[in-house]
Image (cartoon, rainbow, N blue to C red; front, side, top):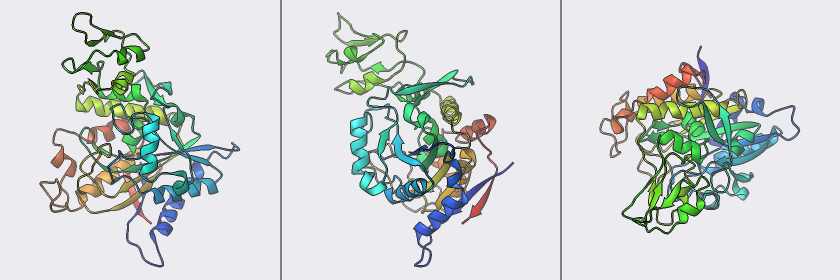
Length: 372
């Protein structure tokens, strides 16, 4: 059965500005329906990617404000949220993460909602959710995402070097995971110490709650015991020299299925309580996690809204592939209908995530595109 996916293009006029069209989009997807009517003060998570410092292709804060205004109007208590990254950057712990979000324009004065880093100060505020699926018996999800009564998932649709594209499913699965959950998706073994660069300072030893790290008395280098390591990834964060790294050893098909299983875990408490918005704008050839963004591969297409995370991602991918590529971009083939994702990342079989998500009952790949 096909799912409705509402589409707003970016044509505007004095009589029909983008704010009016966007409000019509929110009404079409029935944003009001996800606000818990039986609760006096339902907490509504607006799940975002605030953008790494230096990146400029993330969703514009004024669109976020319009969502927040609508949630307040419908009786919700909205907050903006994302979880910390597993790699060391400007969003790897809450202080830097909040600072980056504010510097990128997501301050309360702009968006009229507080910022909450979903997995806490250092990424350990998590909830274990049993799912009993192919790769995971349980998943580790960011606490604030799980505690929210409802969720608006606002995703900047762009390309990604591991998943082919990043949209609603990735925003749920990777964005909703705690640090431990992110590491579990990317790797099936413990982090690795770059021995040549390790100074033996012992900072990682003192922060390891599992006592999985020791200083080798002969080499005076840190060593991680994989039998004790639980994959919390805190050592990656605390190493002052950046000498502990993820072992990016997971195959792409397995990574995509793991990503979907985490999205499934998030949705266990959000069935009927989530709206998805995909912004097909500034479609950059890489993730917003980089501190830069290359020129878009296609022109701005529009904004999608749906209650179905699978349908909205399928629709977004189709619209990107149907568009003509931009001259001078990273694309080699500019023709309409060409697979833009395979063009740039030929090793990524990107439909796997959509197929597996449909198999798990997260939604349908069949959709009806309804233009606003």
